[in-house]
Every structure is written in C-alpha cells, then in structure tokens.
Length: 255
Ligand SMILES: NC(=O)C1=CN([C@@H]2O[C@H](COP(=O)(O)OP(=O)(O)OC[C@H]3O[C@@H](n4cnc5c(N)ncnc54)[C@H](OP(=O)(O)O)[C@@H]3O)[C@@H](O)[C@H]2O)C=CC1
Ligand SMILES: O=C(O)[C@@H]1CCC=N1
Image (cartoon, rainbow, N blue to C red; front, side, top):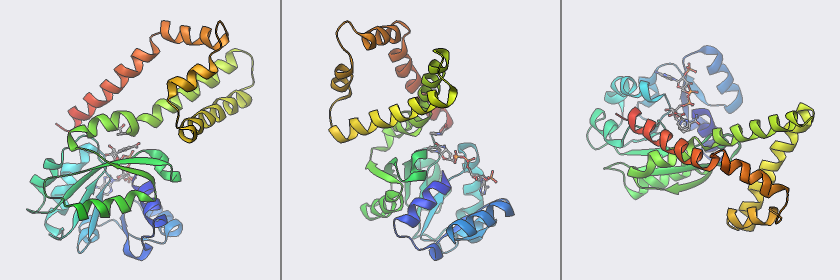
C-alpha cells in the first residue's frame, strides 16, 4: 500500500527528491531507488527527522512499536498520515508529541494504477490545511473523499477490502466458465472484461446498479434464472455479513 501511495504522490507532482522511503531490506531499497528515484533508508528515526509529512504504512500490529520508535524525532509541525486499519487517531495522538496532527486514510489497492478511492478523516488536531495536504498526497492514486472518523472502519469494509471481494467474484465467474467447458484462458478473459465493462458502464452511465441489472434481465430469460440461484444461495446476504465481519475485525484490530 505504501508503494502505491508513493507512486501516486509522485504522479500528483511530489518531487522524488523530497521523499524518503523506509525499508528493511537492501533489495527493496534498490528497487525503490531505481523505480522512483527516491532516497531510501532503513533508519525510521532519520527518515522522519525534519519531515513535513510522515506516512505510516505498517501492519496494525506494528504501529505501536513504530510510533514508540519515531515519536521523539517527529517535528511538531509535521502531519502524520496513517493507512493502518483499525487504530483510531487517538491511538497515535497518545503516542506522538502533543499537538502533532494525525489524519487517517483508507486507500485501496487499485491506487497502484491511479484507480483507487481513499477516504480521509482528521484526528483531533488536524486542520483543513492538513486535510488538503493529505488529499493532494492521495490525489495521484485516484479519487479522494472525506469521511467522519467514526465511519472509517465501515469504509474499510466496503472499499478498502472491496477489491478482494471483486477478485473473488472474478475467480468464481472464471471457474464457472471452466465448469461449463470453456478454456481457463478464455473463461478468465470473459470474467475480467465483463467486470471491467460493467464497472465502466455503472460509472459512465451514472445509472443505479438496479436499473442496469434490470436491463440485462429479460423476463423469463437466462439471467433471471441465474439471479434466482444467487438469491437462493444467499449471496446478497453473504455480502452484508462479509462487510459486517470486516468492519468488526477493524474495530477489533483498533482495540
Ligand atoms: N493492502 C490493502 O489493500 C490495504 C492495506 N491497508 C493498510 O495498509 C497497511 C499496510 O498493509 P499492506 O501494504 O497490505 O502490508 P505490507 O506487509 O505489504 O506492507 C507493510 C510494509 O511495512 C514494512 N514494515 C514493517 N515494519 C516496518 C518497520 N518497523 N519499519 C519500516 N518498514 C516496516 C514492511 O516491510 P517488509 O517488506 O520488509 O516486510 C512492508 O513493506 C496495513 O496497516 C493495512 O491495514 C489499508 C487499506 C488497504
Ligand atoms: O485486510 C486488511 O486488513 C487490509 C485493510 C483493508 C484492506 N486490507
């Protein structure tokens, strides 16, 4: 995720010479230097010293130790942005020097190709100017929306995890094609292009998904037979339960 944000920030006009990426292996350092022309270091404390904006991109379980490591080196004027799921802004505020503004962000992996959507929410001390700086950071990764912090775990359940649900559907659809005798290659291409085309149609037509679904579903036809089977299998209810499970897990990770 951190690399996707890095790529997006550079395409939004951030100068590579202003960025320091922290890494744990020389192989990764070399790849980032060669791909993005940014400086790299394995010293987190040195990386944050003097930085105007610090992006936290480690796993939720590693955030506490990382903050303990870097807190004393963070410039009081810096903005700390975090993409880690779950932890509330207050978790950061308790561990950082008083007054350091925190902004939480929930991106998703299509950010890597500039087609992501990121929701951002301010912590207690973050100003509108801080939010604008963070909006600019993510603008190269796709759309950016503002949300209330209390809603971020729900956002994470929909758009943060959402790409995984779509890949799951793509895989299931392709496997269905194989079941019906199509080659794997053809089945995969049919599934992927259908998801892409349907997504673009929703976006470009602006029509509600229900209306678009009705246009595919001829009375007494083949799609109606398929959709009844999905309803019988509880697929819609499973999506509701899945999103609820993701939101609850984010609540749990945040303690
Ligand atoms: N993946 C997703 O779709 C989304 C993820 N998120 C959040 O983004 C965060 C990262 O997730 P993701 O990118 O999937 O996970 P990754 O494991 O791919 O990325 C975490 C990175 O942090 C590095 N790292 C770990 N500890 C340290 C440390 N102490 N100092 C410096 N670097 C460190 C790891 O280095 P190394 O490579 O050496 O292990 C790794 O590159 C999570 O908190 C997650 O909740 C949010 C929205 C969507
Ligand atoms: O699975 C996770 O925990 C992260 C957060 C949202 C998407 N991936």
